Length: 131
Image (cartoon, rainbow, N blue to C red; front, side, top):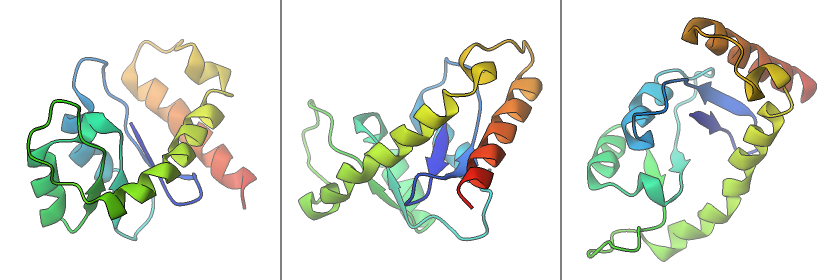
C-alpha cells in the first residue's frame, strides 16, 4: 500500500501479505510517513468506503474521499469532495513508476524485510529523479 502527495511522489509505503483487506492497512501505512507534515486528505477507491475507517481518520484529522460502494444504503460522501477523486490517477502513476523496477515486479526476495528494503530504495530513486 502506498500514499502519494499531490504530485504523485511517494510519501508512505507499507508492504504486507496479500490476505488483509486494504482498509485494515490504512493506519499502518499512515504511520510509515516519510515526511513530517500530516496528511490532510486521503483519496481511495470504493474499497475504502467504510464507516469505521471514516471515523478513525476523522479523529486523526484526515478527510477520507472515496466513492460509495454500489450496495451502500446511507450516502455520507459529499459530491463536491468526490471531484478530488479525479486526481487519483497520480497514485496510479506512482505504481506505474514502481513497476519499472524489475526487482519489485517479480518478487525475488522471500523475506518481507528484503522486499521492503528494495521498495524503499525504489521510492528513494523516484524521489531523487524528481528533485
